Length: 230
Image 1 (cartoon, rainbow, N blue to C red):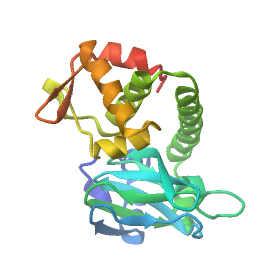
Image 2: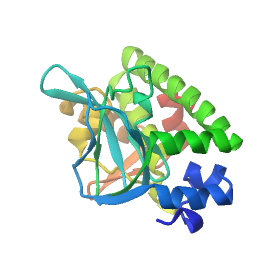
Image 3: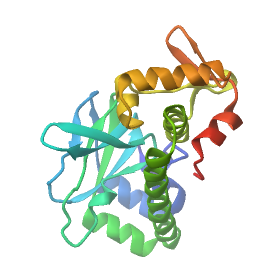
């Protein structure tokens, strides 16, 4: 996508940079289409820049032991990846992979820091973004420590809705973007427990499962169960 006339209204670069800096970004970034289930960056790599999702969906993974990976975050169009690596060490503590084919833009550290210094609205947005990310992480810990299985499923579904929106807004079709096995991973529960949690939501009339698609029937009730502020 061209930053100068980008149709993605969720992109924070497009929203918070002056026009001349959109021109700068367009000429300094690189952009590639990456197929589904491919690595964007890996844990342990040096942080050389930041990644933006122009289109598509991605998951952020944290290693648990030598083989198991846990999905700690999902991201959709207009969202940023790789910011967790900004530290004194400048090494990624997590990995990121595509969920579906995605257009991913890359901006080097040098160019990204130039953007922040020159665009005060972007700098303010990034400050609030990091604050929101910290709050989400704290909420996710609280969800997994305290809530029942169907509340964990509700929280995972709300986070998916917040990240991806609805596939069809008028009928509240959830744009899941992942398999049920991945959903169980994201909710930090087993697959059988996920099915039990979904059944509970079905029984309460909060969601509906039709032809293997999930539809939200009562979003306020789903959000009350999730107990998430964001």
